[in-house]
Image (cartoon, rainbow, N blue to C red; front, side, top):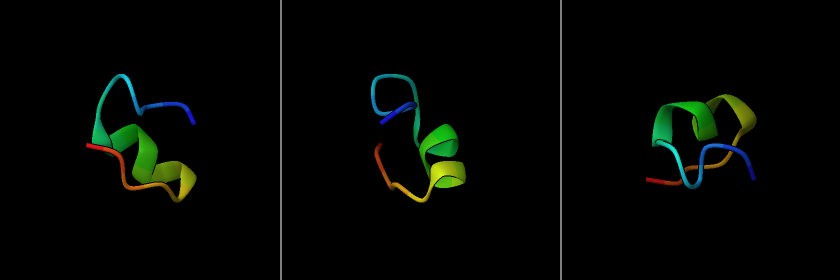
Length: 19
């Protein structure tokens, strides 16, 4: 899960919605 620690916009690109 990249972007989970970083920001939602990276996660959305992977299909994850982490904010």
